[in-house]
Amino acid sequence: MWDGCTLHTLIATFVGVLTFVYETLTSDHQHIIGWMPHGRSWIIVNKDLLIKYVLPTHFTSNKFESFNRQVNGWGFKRFHGEGPDHRSYYHELFLRGRPDLTSMMTRLINPGK
Image 1 (tube, rainbow, N blue to C red):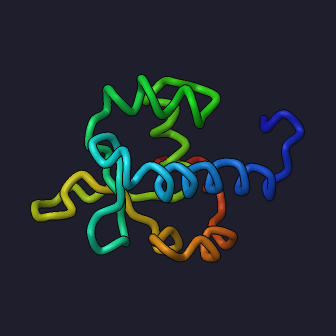
Image 2: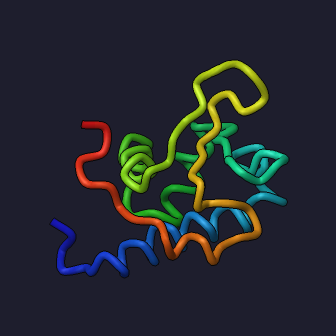
């Protein structure tokens, strides 16, 4: 199922890349993806630009659906209610400035089922 990768490798790969994306692209690419001002969630500002520029560079698939499955599989939730966090993704262990917490994240089994 994971082509011989260990769970630790998967965590390091996906969460590490995600951390890299948000910490390095925030300043120059806030028009694509970025942290919410409070740093507890992040948002996709422009899905088309994410697909065109970010996914092919940092992920093995450039399909948004695959990216979204990965995000859901790692336990990220999406705010659907009204307010300033509408459409943003959050995880209690994924906070701006706290990359040390990502080592405690785990891949969910059958997310959404």
